[in-house]
Length: 400
Image (cartoon, helix red, strand yellow):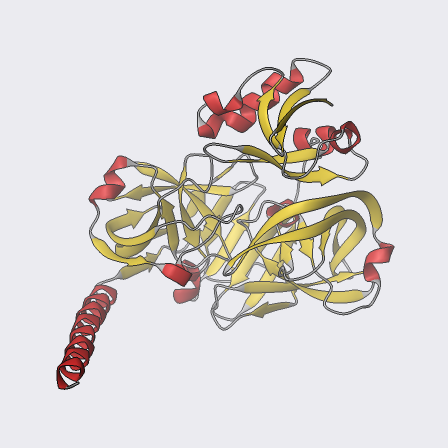
């Protein structure tokens, strides 16, 4: 019994010592961090395939890398897309419950390392921590996310100008910007705005990294969604939420007008109504109707009507034309969403069906990051779409 107690005491002391070393190294690292926000300089950006705001940032003076601006994301999130990332100094690794999940349910490995420098016209950093994700979350050349906390820590006034496609940190608020009702969470990087739909006010997260128009989760039974125009119902959508994933039902409708105030509104916006558990979010399809100014120091948000109206969105081939979407993994392709009364549903396709080939072509033979675009090209070559499907160990040919 005494030996057992000694072992427990030894393990307890050892854990304290290791924890102390970890805390000391972490504190030492934090003390040595530097972040400089550059005022009144324009950082031009490009609009990516999913309407994301993409920046060029120089990492460790080894060339410019593509990064995404996300006003709702904390810190700088990287994935392992470049060989030189593996040479960076290791800080720690997240395990167990702290590991994120992706749609499909997989746990992914995340390591935190340190970069020496990261810089662009908008900001520069030294000794900054980044997270390495061991799988590709996005099939693109994006390797990182610039989070909103970069600007909240310095209490900056961040301008997002879609007319001329630039970001800038400015000293004062221009007179041609209008303040709208907003809410800043305990962490200032979390910015929410109030929007009125059919006379009822709701709180939405302002998320430049979310490419959809709107996720709308009414928190009170006011019947407001019945006033939205019905476009198409979808079901079986996967949604990523804090702590894991959920299978949710999503109904897509159209709102005639969504108001910031009496004089500012967005017309004919696609709204996704969920059956719960997803935070209200406004994506960049909505955001790009205006230029924005986020005053992190005074916790205020301003908008400016754009000089040029956004171009109308072209139909999405999978969802709007075929009436289904797919989840692409390394070894499987499955149906993850169907439109009610869409072509795919009428043809007999079911959620969870595993796709073996598109018009006779095995898409799994194509590199992961090219599969979606190559599949669309193959499917567009013919009027009819033939999918070879595996369902409950049976092989079926389904013509859409």
